[in-house]
Length: 111
Image (cartoon, rainbow, N blue to C red):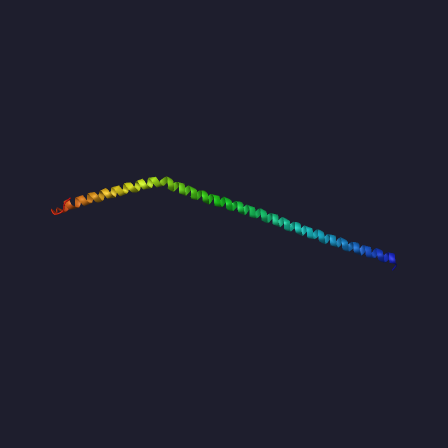
């Protein structure tokens, strides 16, 4: 083979190698793009999870707040009812104490 033909063959081979290298690079870039897309999807998913967790946390906090407000609202009513029942029980106990000695008819006990 002549020198010119060898050079052309070399250039063609070199060009083919360059094309292959460029294709490999392009493929690598698409792979990187895919991984970037995967990362973006992952980030979006994590954002959604975070927002879901925040909403869930807020709802739990709201429930706790409502429960505490309900307890605070019911606390005075419960204390009044408790006092009334204690007074009623206390008056029943007093009346029972007064009634028992009279019913027993024991003259030694002083009422």
